Structure formats: structure tokens, C-alpha cells
Length: 232
Ligand code: XBP
Ligand code: MG
Image (tube, rainbow, N blue to C red; front, side, top):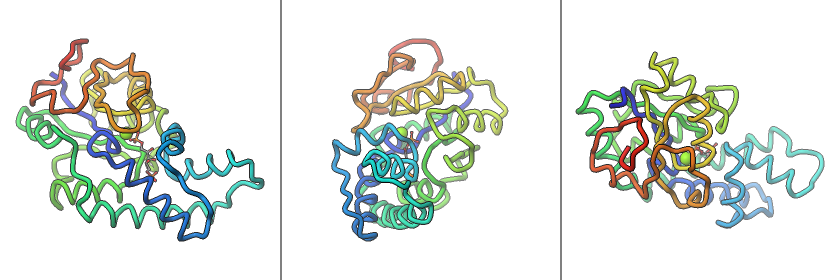
């Protein structure tokens, strides 16, 4: 049994990437940019982790010089983040199947819970306050966000920081992820990974994962193990 379960947020706890996409498009209209990211474009852009990084990458892809000024990136991201919070707070993004049960079962078994994500503390709080109540953070022993570390996923930084805070070895934990970049990040930190397939990352290469599920309800509250087997 794993001593701790470390959860990604976007795509893993909830299908938030679609809301991120809408929030980006809202910011582009608001800022008077002629950009629009449809689902196909966004799927491709998700290879770049982090919202600010994603906008810079898109700008560069358009071949426009000079690079998007930092002030514009910051302003766009502020507008995007505010709109994302409004969307999440409207209650339109429930947790994915099996998530609430797994959190409760893990807690009952004495497993520790942590969050390792690329998005911001504000965005995590908006989602989980809505879904789990305002005191949700009391159940988590460590929460590390993209801007807390030097390099975002697929770098292992968020996961290494979680291991340091939990004072646990990588092999005593299980990471729960939905994307290839998340799988690489956790694997580079030496943590076994369970994949829950999400909307935008279905086609990613999950060969390095311990198990790949359609969603976490397939676990039926079962115990997380670290050996290779269908129900991790
Ligand atoms: C999630 C992301 C994030 C969100 C946007 O990756 O890449 O960038 O799309 O969030 P993961 P911000 O699920 O692997 O952590 O705009 O707040 O960066
Ligand atoms: Mg994710």
C-alpha cells in the first residue's frame, strides 16, 4: 500500500482543461487579440504546460516578432484566471467519477494526500472549494503548484518538492495523472504512476505507467499498490 497519493489537478480531478480553454479565449477577446483556440488547436498547445508559457508558445508559433511582452502575458493571464474562477464557481465542473470516493477511502486507510500541479493555488482553491467545501485543504499534507518551483512539468520539480515536504521515498507514493507530460514528471521523480484518461490526452503515450484507467471509479476504493497490475 502506498503511503501517499499525489494528485494532478487539471484533467485528473476534473475535466478543467475545457474551462481553461474557454477562459483563454475570453481573455483574448477582452484584450482585443484576434486569437481563438478551438479544441484541436488547444489539444496541440497542451504540450506546453502552464498558461503563460502556452500563450508565449502560440505567439512564437505565429511567427510574430518580437515576443509577446511580459506585461501583456501577465494581463492576459490575469483576465484568464479571473474568468476561469467564475466558470468553476458556477459549479459547471464537477469532480470526475471516483475521485471523491478515492479521497475518502485513502483518508480512511491512513494514506496521505498531496497535490502536484502546473496550475496556480488560486485555481486549485476555486475548484476544490466548490467541489469539496471551503475547508478542503485540511485533508492534504502538501500542495505544490507550478509557480512554486523552477521548472513546470514535464520536469520533476513539483513531484520532488512534494517528496521533500512529505519526507517520503518516491517508491512509497503513487502519482495520479492524466497526461504524458505529467507521467514524465512523476516518473523522473521515481514515483509510480496511475493514469486516468481524460478528454485532451487520450492519445498520449502511457507506456511507462503502472496502470491506465478510463476513470478512477474503476478503482472501487481499492488499495493503491506499486507493482504492475491492472488495478494499481
Ligand atoms: C495543466 C496545465 C495548466 C492549465 C492552465 O497541467 O498545463 O497550464 O492548462 O493553468 P497539469 P494556468 O494537469 O499536468 O498540471 O493558466 O494556471 O497555468
Ligand atoms: Mg493534468
